[in-house]
Length: 373
Image (cartoon, rainbow, N blue to C red; front, side):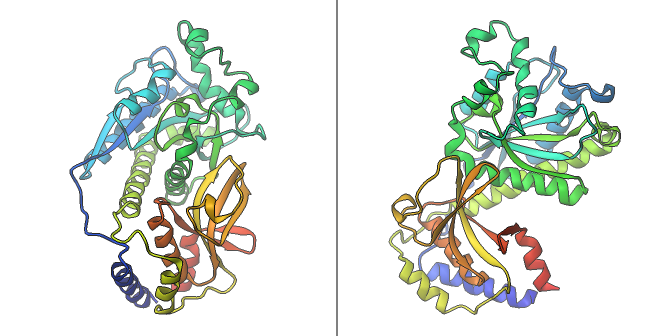
């Protein structure tokens, strides 16, 4: 099966080239800029679950992530802090903006009055259900430690759900890329470290609110949980988590580099895509439906072609408080790969394939592995 897949992949690339999808651009002159934000610091200790100090843990993990990324060709790493200093919440996002960063990653530890545990990753968004407001409130409360916070934050109250929900969604434009980045980091933390999956979520975090690029907030785990707190605080745990965050960032950079390749023929049509599909061998997965995820947004759009750069076969589904927009609907994996390439050529540079079994979304990697067995 693996040989068959490699043969298809070679054929797939050949079709893309012949139809003008790919160019030979290999521009390595511009580094991929990552701004890493170690939460809290200085007079703001963060949470102190089980006597551990969040500010020290996240600084250590952040510096380790940066060190791993700096070893990779083409990366430039910038830190909001590299020592135990207090950086105002309002100043962290602008550091990334001034650097014209490609992504912003803020690292924290969680806490709860129960024995809750697990890793979770957040993107900027409004959680109207209220489930994620408590986490957002805890992370935003550092505002109270700042001088003149009422003037600086224009009356914003971290303890007020109305204020949290009222945050302007500057991150809207980058939401789909943020979700992709968050998903790669979250999957690594869960699958490679066997952690409980608390999923990718949206929440109104001020530190993400003011950054003008894909941005995520990583909660390493709950310091208040007896065993997880010990793991997160340990030298072994910090090293392992830093490795998985770095791997997620590297995978994201590689995905974006592929997705944003220049295309030689911007006039390719859906009819030409159908002709290309007919020349490939079908790869059918019984009981599985593949779709191309184009975007995720808090806005509800009609699924007409004019809203999606002329693409047809658009569907919409509400998941975790967000509207997700999909292109295509097929059990033929080869077909959906070509449709993904077409979507990217049309301007949806971060489009990617997702899989459904019935109405339930399932991991694409698990679907592909099952057939290879």
